Length: 290
Image (cartoon, rainbow, N blue to C red; front, side):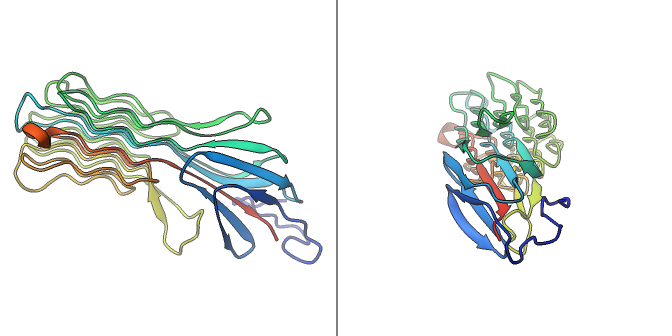
């Protein structure tokens, strides 16, 4: 039998005569009786020997979205990008086949008054399973459009105040804008925080996961902070790689790669109005091999 973490708890697990799984693909590390395959870019995960347990644990995070742009209204705010969708499971049954791993790219920040670009989907795919697809984050709102639906939704902007919704089971909605305070992108753990009159909302927090067992939980899929019409006190991105929102005369922060964090919203004049780029996603697979 297996426990909550997909670890075999019956006689012989990890002991003499135990036949563990053997697989290739990604960057492989060893942690005690477990192998961890980390995919920072698209590749294949091939199980060459199934072993006794026939289960894996996975984390699939999509690319975060770019923040929006408000070039025409100098000094007012665009929305932060939504985080990439977050999916995790333990005790997932597999077979001895090759699984296609896709890691979603981060979305570009908005320019010329436009919304940020959605992040790319991340997935584990094979005909023997129902495809595991994590949805890319929704772009932050700009002058020409509201926050976009995604894994987590993008924040609203000055002239298009509505935020984007999140995908059920993967993320949360962004927040609406408030006058010249841009809405924040949603994160895997919470919706984007409310914007103030001139202050962008703080990006929604991501979720912690210990699949790589570093000794400290790692957060993934934080939302981008909303842009502000202020000259100090930028709105933070959500814990989990979210980029900070732009100030009146400063660039927005980018989402952190391989976390699925959303980019910060732009909110200033000329070149500073560009929204931050979303962070790329990641796929991590863990299993017992001895």
